[in-house]
Amino acid sequence: MELSRLSTDALASFAAFADRLNFTRAAEDLHISQPALHVKIRKLAETLGRPLYTRHGRRIALTPAGEAVARLARDLDARVAAFLADLDGTAPSRLPVLAAGEGAYLYLLGDAVRHGVRLINGDRARTLTAVRTGRADLGVAVLDVLPSDLATVPLAAYPQALAVPDDHPLAARRSLALADLAGASLAVPPPSGPHRVALERALRAAEVPWTAAVEAEGWPLLLHFVSLRAGLAVVNGCVVPPPGVVLREIIDLPAVPYYAVHLPGRGDDPLVAGLLTRIRTALSTGSPPCTSRSPSTSTPPPRPSGTC
Image 1 (tube, rainbow, N blue to C red):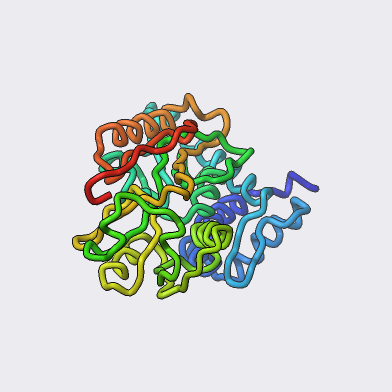
Image 2 (cartoon, helix red, strand yellow):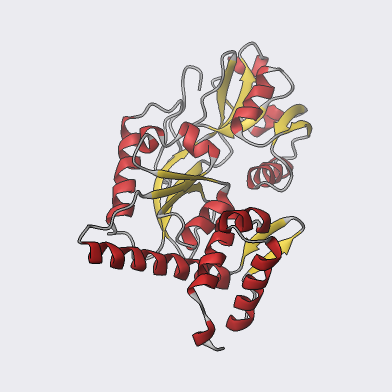
């Protein structure tokens, strides 16, 4: 491998591609043609002697080597910015960057993202990639398996709950078991989603028959279909149901743990530490619809009351 052939231009181009995971959009950001970007990334991969991304149908994912290259590119960019600021006699500064999914932004993070933070929205895989590549200082996601290459900080855990119309027979119950869902028509995420996979596994293990009434992505759309009476939905207990819909905890499903993740060694970084402080403050002062519990505890979550 000829490291001398690595260029800052190639690294910057790859960083733009890593942000988008889309050749067309990355090329537009760089103001170059898509074939030119393909050539840059292909030559960079050849120089390093390993693939930098994989393609699964239309979905592109970075390899571990690709994540490392993107992280290097952003680190070099930060060093250059600091050097130029030092020459000008100014203090280098930038806003912290947070990556999280739609549900975390809507129902968990609250005032932590009100101002002074750059935000990235993506599913769990994209959130972890944003942290691994250095694009985000901190990520927030539901994690059932903790990544070995990232530092993880438990934030909160919420019971899983069934969203039902408030006049549905199951709404009269304070809590439910999976067996109560027998024969239910459910609004569920697409088959490849982690929530759908885990839910199907739990229902199958409990020998509970059910049917998929509608498939949709995101808690707001699933809750909308519940309000339209298209089906019931199993959701995280931190969501806020629309008018006419209530949540009932499902006691034999595991709690859903939210974690903050960052690169190892960055726990004392002011950008990371400041974001964590803001998020913890938002969690301690907010009023989620269900009582949360720490992911590290083994005691059952408190039983919800009211509409939760």
